[in-house]
Image (tube, rainbow, N blue to C red; front, side, top):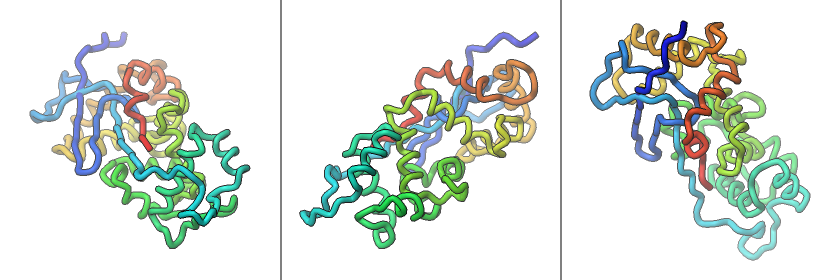
Length: 257
């Protein structure tokens, strides 16, 4: 018989220079209990774990024209297609292009052909310099999941998809889908003990390290609470049910442009 769900959870809150990490309801849910686990003062507990970003692009890039030269960044058809396949307005799409181009202006053209948006890629080493990612312990997973060729390097289309999923207008179900993929470290379609151990290690890297026994105890408790069919791992459905109990998930799984 399963243990009765505890009302006490562990909140891990870590601050960094450019972004702050609020382990309270974004990428995945870790069902942690105080019981049997010893933490130093300053490390708290919580039922969900994640990161909240503020990604603000300024100044506004409100038109497809460049300094009066009337050079269109995208064709009308491209803008229509992007509006149909993302959660962005035309203005926001142009702002995303500006942010992408600022990473390497000598490589990214002002006018983007369909081939360039798909084939021209910025290396992950450059994407990782973004303040919102550089201190994020899951930055490699985020880039790998959104990279269409799996390398972690991003095309403009990949970059736009990433920001679209993290936008405030993206539906909860889509955010859950990508959150699950980010935490499925080995890509086998489930979140198993090895995935959970890796997640816990990353979440606690700014604090003192947990002992192997402590990590094993946390993993056991997570599965005890969330693994409904007792098969030793979390499916996407089980993950979704757990995150549904975190009311601030959508707000924290968000990048503002």
